[in-house]
Length: 632
Image (tube, rainbow, N blue to C red):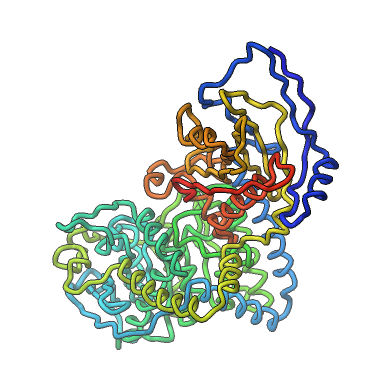
């Protein structure tokens, strides 16, 4: 058996509106020479090709592993965005520049969160109280929204009121406010003259959002539950962060409603996921006079380079593209006193923390208050360790009480998980009339559905389709026609058809491997066959693709970006049943304001443009579109 082949290079997709004569001329001028395979007697035929023989990229996309294609693509876009932000930051010189910078970021941030709901009555109840050694403990339930219950522990100092109040958002502890580290932080604050309110986030403690009919918690991981909520939140133009931030803002409302607490002396501190919420709340709620986020602030440069995006509330839509980095949570509140609490061996990279601190320190210095920005670093792993609790308490006491002296944490008893409960059954969703995060999102969707119906009714269809393309980030056909195409020289012969291998490059750094199944007697019809697992998934002998080939259809089966040969390997196997292996890749795009659906839609359009004129001299193919799995 002998094959004679001509070398193949690259070509561009001819525009759809190009006359046939010009299209033919363009083909002749193209640097590509179509692969010609001369088959002789005795040629073997494939029996439904599969496996490695249908690989197109052979493990490499450009000069890197194919499985890293999307991460590298997003990393390049992110680095360009970081460079733009650095240039903007360096132009901020005067107090007036600082104020304009802060307002621009604040407005963007609130818009990306979807705005705030109406402030409704808290209907707060103290459901338990007990005197402790040096403080008083109260169990509190309040409603951050109607019938959306928040459980909290309030630690009150044995001191003459009014005294400061500190909000303490929890990290991702399964037992929420009952976590020993958070209890100890609150006790330390209370014993040094400051009230501390520590509340359960959704998905933790008494606020799990996924229960069975008996009240059993069905999702034990708080980060997974936060991201499950995030899936619905993103679809309604908001974020898990918006729900959690509002819980915290209403917690501050509760603190300032208490007669014992001075509303002008409010602080906020939290660790890990609580450090995230502290960073958010301190940037958004101007009542927070003093803040100490712990074990969260690094930089997006280092975060994306190391552990990658985390659960849903830690990713704000398009913030990297816009230029809102970790440092900006501090910059938005400048020059109010802020202490970054950091751990040397944290998975939130410490060098990123120091870079963020330097940016903040320079910003505070420009405003004339360099002493109000500081950083405490302990030689520990991730966690609200004793050293950070002490540093936080001393910082709060310095700025809220007016005392700055050494603090030693006593070894005092803390509550057990059952002792920390505020509800009779241990879950707020079992309270009468309780609403869940899913209820909030469903209500938001009902409002949006009514608005959508009116919008589609009153707006010309072409204009609405233009808006859809704009929202999804789908470029016009004229730009997609610039796609680079490479057709590999070898063709795989099969019984009644041949398989060509094609690589399309719709934009720098993105490679779409595809198989084109060409029947011996084409009918003039073609099928773009999109499979959510891989392009070869239905290519077996007698399978769906072969059935279409027998009808004379030219079938093109591509791997859209992130599928098949370019699928990103998952780092968190326990997350894959919920979100697939590429959830972090999704969030890389989300941070850049890029829609995965939009990008893959572009890929499909690019493939259709190519297929429409593939091996056609006169009339373009009539294309059928078939999609299955996540491509549907």
